[in-house]
Image 1 (cartoon, rainbow, N blue to C red):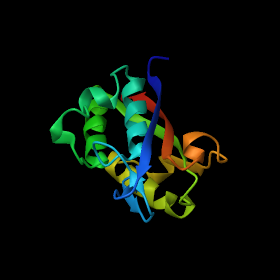
Image 2: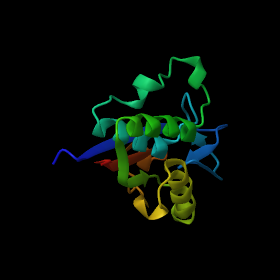
Image 3: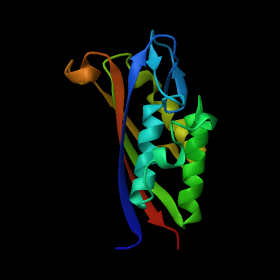
Image 4: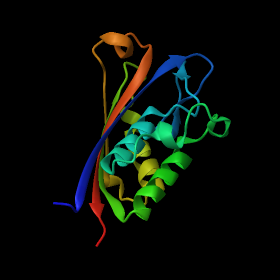
Length: 161
């Protein structure tokens, strides 16, 4: 079974005033946004970490360090394109992605299809291969107290023949 690899990813960012809320490459109307060196898109970051992890290539901090000014305010979809290129250059392609966003607010269900389409477009996938679910943390922990938003992702990579 050397023709498939599975990776998982996780990211969390703090919610603050004065920043846009960007998830899955789309801006969602909300009173606060995610703090980060780039656009702080936790969903896209979790997916990238899962892709890199599947091939034992480290994490996104290795490729896009928060100490490097060139990544300040970066659009995470552009970073995702670079990670996808790295994966493809090694002969792998994405089989499917399964992700969960954990946030108390805003309600994300109305935005999931648009996020799927946006991410699938960047990765040249059919949207039905990009699963995104949303849940709350039942008011527990920092996410439950609305201090941040987290995302988890699992990616299946397939060796191209």
